Image (cartoon, rainbow over all chains, first blue to last red):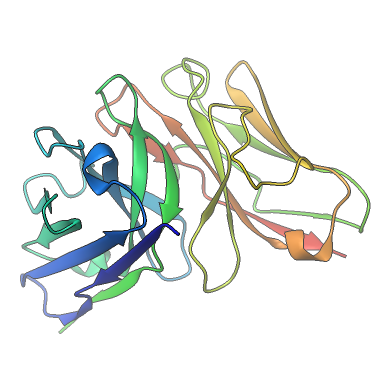
Length: 123
Length: 111
């Protein structure tokens, strides 16, 4: 059974940093692109970042470019999201998901998704 | 404001059919066959229901179908069941620097 388990969320002050992790199991992690998608409380979905199977290509939403860094460790079947210079508007549940890619240009669809981890940016 | 436009809510009675629209531009929905739909129950993670406009993942009921005309994609649910009550989101690849855009979501109520 495919499983994605996010961790690392919590309360952080504006300007602070946090690293999210997503532990994958039940599939060959190193052959799948991965993404992070977030959902602010009571709001819709927003794609955040994606990474190719090898980790050689990364993609970011304009809203997080220069502040967030996506990475992966295929030996540990784990996806990461390093979040720096956090803002109140980054408050959300962060989901990791496997992705398909559009000819290496960006993510297409997301399936499956983890259960999410809540990040709260507040003083 | 979301990049793709969905109705905030739709409703239907058990057994009926409903359609949720998702309107974008030629840079996203109209320009590519990379539209997907997600179902989200309260407090749960989203679930992929349709990908590449009209393809259905294994395990998703055939009552769910997708289509596209011009800049508008649609999700149709036939034979409505109580368990279909959820939020539904559309998504599309986009040629803009955003790469991926979502709709604002549609709350489906089964009366």
